[in-house]
Image (cartoon, rainbow, N blue to C red; front, side, top):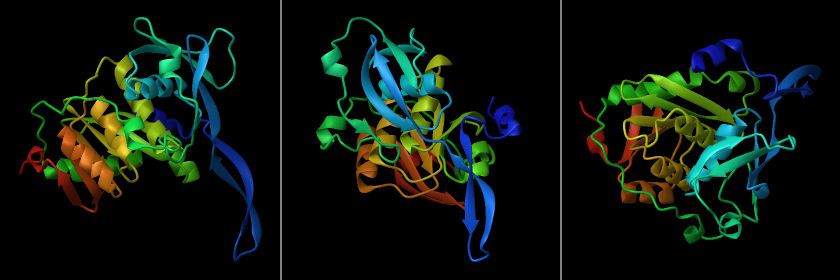
Length: 267
C-alpha cells in the first residue's frame, strides 16, 4: 500500500546520488536526483513505443499507457529475453501491429509531443457517468494527502505524482514519475490489475498542472473527477467539458477553481 511504501522512503532505483556545488556558499555536497531512463514497450515481441520514465512499476506503466491509447491491453510482464528497460504487453484478441505501432519518441515532459495534431491523440471515451458527489472540503484535502505520500519527491524534488482516491477521500494508490503522464499511466495500470476500471466512483489527483493528455487518460479510465495543484490548459478544460468530467485546478490552501461540471461538489 501507499503508506507502507512511503515509510520505506524513496526506492533505490528511483533516485541517484550526485555532487552539487551550493551557491553562494561555495561548498560541494552530495545530492539526490530523480532517475530518468527509457522504457521500451513491446506488443507481440515488437517495439511499439519508447517513453522516458522513472524506473519502478514498469508493468503498470506499460499497461496504463496502452489502455490510455485505446488498446485492449490485458496484462504486462517482463519479456522472455529479459531485456533491460523493456516490458511486453498482451492484448485481448488479434491485433494489427502496424495499426498500434507508434514511430515516435515520447518524452518525459509531454506524452503527446511528436504526434503533431489533435486528431492523432483523440481516443474515444464515453462521457463520464455515475452519481459521484463529494463535499468541497474533501477535494481541498487531496493534494496534501498526495504530497505526504511522495517519497521520491521528498528525496529529490524532481517528480510528478498521481493519486487515486475513493469517494471518501481514502488514498488507494500513488505513483511518482519524471513524466506526469507516466505517473497517471502507472495508476491506471494498477487500477486495471486491481479490477477497479472504470473509475466511475473514484477521484484522480495530480501534483502539477492539467494537460489535455491527462484529461484524456482520465476520460478513458472512466474517472469523473480530476483534481490538480496547478492550472489546466484551455484544451484540457474543453475536453473535460466535452466528456462531462469535473475539473478542479489550483487546489491549494483550502481553495479551488472548478472549471467544469461543478454539480459533483456538494455542500
